[in-house]
Structures are given as structure tokens and as C-alpha cells.
Length: 174
Image (tube, rainbow, N blue to C red; front, side, top):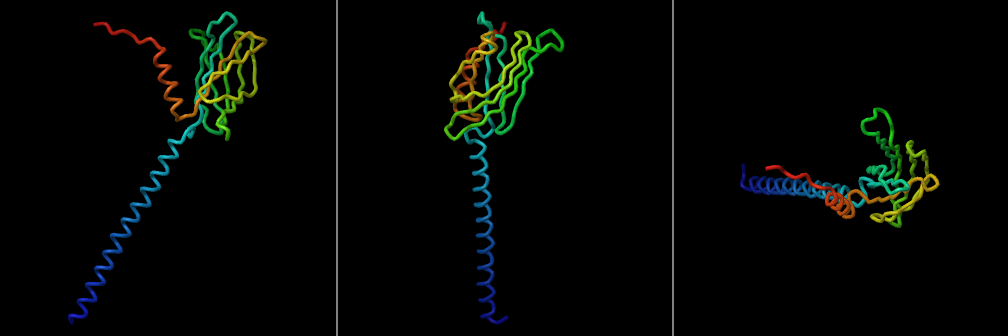
């Protein structure tokens, strides 16, 4: 092969290898960018839905039930709590759909049934994330305290920490 042909072949191989290495680097950059965008979207405030906590108290102040549920974005969620030790007896049936509005507030559409107190209620509630709001139900037979926080969020982390601090820890016997 003449020397000129070697030079042309060498230049061609250099250009081809530069193209292959550069193309692979560009592919890595594109895939990394896509993975970072997906991770950011997953961590976006409220991406998984809203944690809805409800506390029901009777007229004497006794806690009737404290259901908590994560309502997925755009879908309704339902919880049915049964009476302990009484097979099939329902304490509370609770259905909620939570929508995060442009203002940052959370709109809850709920349906609630408490057979032991003869309370059946439904409606909508506007909540500021992380702020409790009380509503009287069944002509004052029960007081419902609502709380909603986005999942995931710093407000959720604070809520979970406060819940953990309120629970008594069992002692270890040594």
C-alpha cells in the first residue's frame, strides 16, 4: 500500500474512533439527563399524592378513630376500620379524594360513615398543607380534625417525626 493510502486510512480511523467515543459520551449524557429528570419528578412535592389524617372525637372528647391514608394524585382512596375483637363490625368507613390546587391548598372530597355514632357525612374541605382544621359532624355528635400534607415533602417528614415522638416506646427488659 502506498504511503499516501496509509495516511488516508490512518486519518479515517482517527475520525471514526473520535466519532464512536464522542457518540458514546453523548449517549451517556442524554441518559444521565433523563435519569436526573425522572428522579427530580419523583421527589417533586406531592408527586405521590396527599397524606390525609383524620381524627374523630365524640362529644366527651374520646378518640373514636384516627385513620390515615395516602390518597394518590387524581384517585380516590378508601379505609375501613373494624371494631377490635368484633368480627365484621365496622367502626369507621372513610373515602377521600385529594387534589392539590394551584394555590398550594389541598381540596378534599370525602365520604364518612361511623355506624356506632349514627353519623354519615360527605362534602368537601379546603385545607392548607400541614394545618389542622376541625369540622362538626352529625349535629355535633363527632368532631373531625382534618390534616393533609403532600407526599413527599418536608411537611410529611415533620408530621411523621411528630407522630413518632408522641408514641411511647416500649422499654427493654435486661
